[in-house]
Image (cartoon, rainbow, N blue to C red; front, side, top):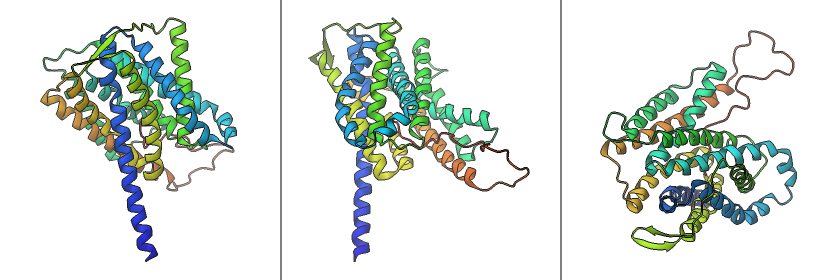
Length: 343
């Protein structure tokens, strides 16, 4: 009887974890569609992302401190992970995404950014000279083919090349996000998210201070779905939903489901973003772009599944041909996994 109770509790916990993962993905997806009208009204991407990360830092400060209680030493010891995660995984990924959204349809910008895991596959292949698993190669081919359809390179869609460049840099930041969050660490997920958010806000502030990111923040009204609202309404939404709420709920999902399952749920962010951009901004995708979006999501999912197989294969004992040198390490140690979710 006790086994039945434990089993029911496990199923219930998994259901809650799946629900949390979907809520986090939906929350993350609101970022682009909600902020784009603000950018069209005169706000610069630099100002919007600075406010978003600052507000997110303030909202996550309490949960992060609670999660880190008694473990502040881990924060000091792993400051490199926090700084790398905050500058590349948060500031570069989010900042470049906002710059891309200013010039591109939301779905296109997000799909290009979500090719970040493919960059990690290419980097690992070049670094280790080890051919990835078949699922990884098939997934990469599917994702790249889907990206060609999303960009509609042979059709009538004309996309801003500068916006595409920003989206590609955001993909590099996205790859860094996955690499840093997949590292073994003593830091709790909410603690890493909160500390990284603070570092990201400081990095964006420094970039604005030296003039790299212009700060333009007119006190204007913004039209969202036919309703005119003050400028602070969309800012509050992007500061709360896709930042504080999304990171916090995503951390719960990872804890309940594990990184691998949660990472697959995170892919639904792309589909949610396409739907929200369609509903809120009337950015209806072409049929060929919808097919491309499905291929990109399926391809990235296969890449992550293949990464799990690569990691498992790396743990198998290899034939010993020579005595390893003292202090040496295998080619796959410290390699980032591709199983961490965006949130």
